[in-house]
Length: 319
Length: 309
Image (cartoon, rainbow over all chains, first blue to last red; front, side):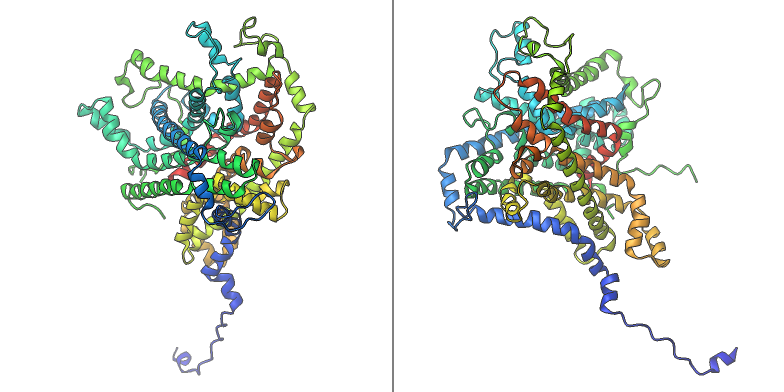
């Protein structure tokens, strides 16, 4: 035994120095860089760069086929005096506000209904989501046909019920047109709100309801003091998404009315498409779409605080 | 051992759509409600909502097979049904228009863009969740933010970018730009899935001498297959649904995708256009609905996962 200790020490094989190449292969920061590269490439070249470029274009007088000169805030000044632009801002806010509020109300209601026990529950839930799956444009076309001025099935049904005696000009009248596009938007958005809120509802423990019922709570009180507080965080997130996508909606309007009649349904997105691509005034169009950014930032702030609050409620269980 | 109290799962996603129906269909406190009451407070509103949600599809399908004269004469024929369906509109769609091309374009663009995005997102999500390089937390936040940047404010500058790169009017323009919508979403979704995979598995593999790449391919990905399917299906649907980029970047009729083509090519002043228009809308929706029917659970978990994480 002692021999070993007495033996002269054999030099251990030298540990190889980590070369730069080894570092690149194994260092987690370098590895992270390699792994992130494809995603970051896409997001930088096709998202971050265009985002900046869009703001730059809004300060130029670019037209299609001609790079613009810097003209400062002239586009914005021009828009400031443009009554159609303000009409589109008004329409966008009206559209977003009414559609989101109703989507939330019906979506929550539908989620509560679907959360009950009943036969064919799974099938019903699957059916409810279909409007969300089908491409918006295609269902918008169906609505276009349903709201046709001559052959509308709604006008026909109301006439045969004796409620009206003329065809309603759904997409030709300003108020009706607004109501119709808002309806179509709600129709498409409700399933999303309902199914995501349903996922939230299912995390609520039934024992809470049982305890509250024993204490004599009514159904409204069950909702108000148990369901709603527990759902608040997910409501915040879902509604942020809903508001965001309603605010920037384009395809539904484009397929149904193209902004008409008399610009009554022009949203900021459709107006910017019309000005930039159809009329060729890229600078002006970019200014309109850049004007949406402050609103989006506001929505993102709400989402951020919604998420924070959610973490706080559920405890730190991420990671 | 087995009678530990069940830990509360964050969300039982599977249960959302596949709760096994019980024989008496009563559970918990539902016996407190009488049947008439349930009829009024549950079945009546539910059937109204479901009717409104599904009616446009019925109408779409019915219009697609109705003969023209019935479409525009609501008085002699009841508009809600037809006794002599015709396949004229569908025939016209498939054999007298570019519709098969458009379907192919849409499919091609959607599949390519989805695969590109999933590959990029798998790598990014793995790096953010498991490599935890310096600043990973911030990058995760930035990716979430980029999820919130809508196409409607990007299409004008992107049009100039696409033009500069010479991609205008080619499917590549869409294949390269759609990932900007898909990557943030699927990265965020996959991050959630990767977090649920036990870290110990990876540590074992590391001790056995596996490289990070091998760990990702051989351990993490097989375990994350449900997440991958969810991400794939949802991305595919988003691609199919995308409109404004396709409208802006494509010009020639034969290159268009289904949503754009239907809106632009079928909408003429013809009073008889409705049949083929609705047939086109129906044919454009069917592939997605069929896909959805097979993967309902994955679809829902994708949708809720994106919101919940």
